[in-house]
Image 1: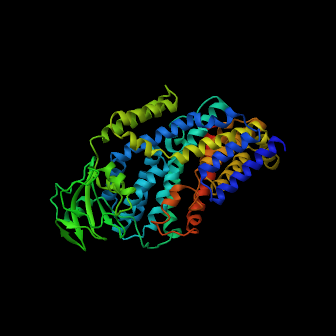
Image 2: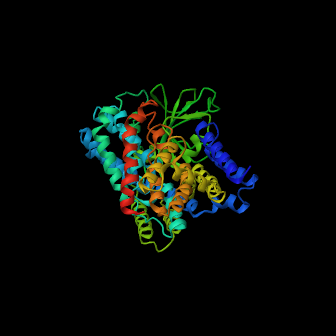
Image 3: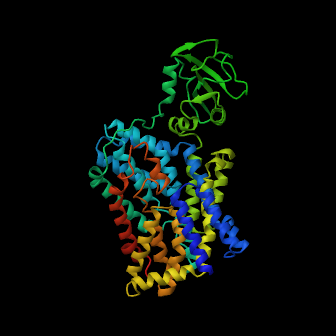
Length: 519
């Protein structure tokens, strides 16, 4: 088989594996890289180049910066301010929710922003007597639009900016993405406000996300504790656990004030069938209120099969603890990173690394939190798919596909080429991750530009815009999946509201992009 044929077969198998979803996406990506090496398409250096690419460093550092904002309560505080000021009018709430999640997404990524705000939005929906399904899908969809406000909004932006350097000799600037991001956010909000009530289902859910923002008061009332005892701080927390039927703790004697065997936790209260107990011998079903550092609470409740945690300590901390003393430091670090990225005095990866290191050095996050914040699946996916992107270019597959696109669409109108690239990107993006989609389509876009003699930058930007238009299925992006359960959605609910948004994104990619990045 020719190198082009081998590359296209690997590409096809990768798409099938992503759609099949039976194999972890990270493993698929590694398999792709290894397959290209074994078949001789890529050299050893090309196979492992993805793991040393500056894009990987930049993305990993952004995860740590985002964790700093989340860990200090900045994102939770922003959500709580929204809840207090939103009022009861649906249109106003949708606008405020959309603007908030778009801004947060631009700074800390789609998934981080949506995950931080889902509980707040559910509570807000219940307070105004609206079904969560009326607000949660707009939350996720507005986040996708917000991902194009800044370079840091999504790893796809970082990839496109880097490819623009290789293909056109200049990156896409940190704020430059906002030239299409702002119209997309405005257009998305208009569609959500006008069409949302008609196209979104009104469906109650059995298990809505819990509001844990007042958990300290709940503990104080439930266990008759003094407010000082039930206080939650940035360092110390409380969590409830239930003794399981086959727990090794059954028969142990416990009492309020005792320290656990590990020495990390203190038993604050013990209850049996709602009744407070003093010194007692544990039985199955007893509830223990434990106090300790948040790290210790998470460590001992995550892996201990002797107890079942009622509300995960990390969820309680993120919702119930107000802005910590480190919040100003986190905001300061973020501001510094944005300035470095905007001025361009250092490469983006360096600016993000400096910010991530500052988050740890200023004790905004611990080293453990920094490690946990990094989505290794995302990094492996990107690193493993970069060799495929390389192979598509080096084998001639990109030129072959580009020639096919040009033959079908012709060279008369570059707008038709933009439309074609955008449509293919949108369709593929509903089936596999938008990052994988961008890695596949970007080299093809560059080849189309070379074939037709136009600038590659508008075609690359069209890929970035269209890759964000993942609205038609709940599995298109993790953010779509996050709101699926809490919103009580069904698979077919997404395309109804998603289709008008897809049209908007394709229109922006085809008509607006060339205004700012001429052919």
